[in-house]
Length: 138
Image 1 (tube, rainbow, N blue to C red):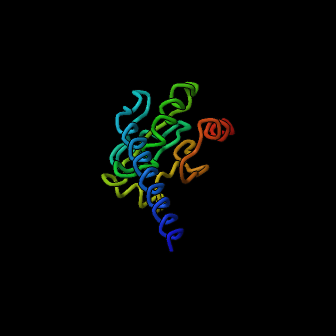
Image 2 (tube, helix red, strand yellow; image 1 turned 45 degrees about the vertical axis):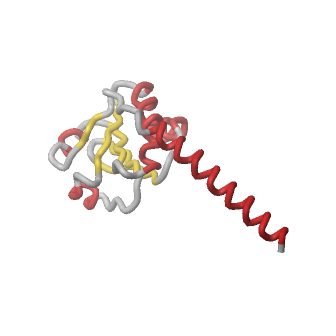
Image 3 (cartoon, rainbow, N blue to C red; image 1 turned 90 degrees about the vertical axis):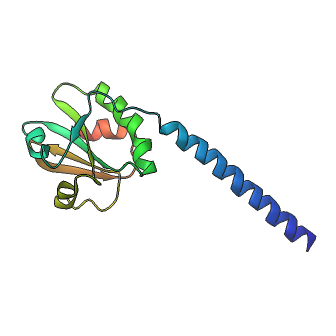
């Protein structure tokens, strides 16, 4: 019985240690600012901004931790893309029409558009290298 209690206690301590570490890690992501090269999209300007461009649109929400994890990656990506490529963000909580039109069910969802048409879609956190490789195909 003593061994069982010790194992339970150790597991509880590990659980709380991991929670504290994760909370500190997520708090550090809260201070990341969006790069000025990333376009801010809305229901009103969405179609206009996508014309004659190859653009990666991040469908996100403020409460989504994986979305916050993507922000530094997207900032870095926006800095390293050639002029004819862009990165944009669309807050799904404030822009329901576009999110519904493109059937965005989970976030982060990244949709690659070329001349206003969807050409590829990625769900979840992705690396900069992966996104660069996929974008350069178009």
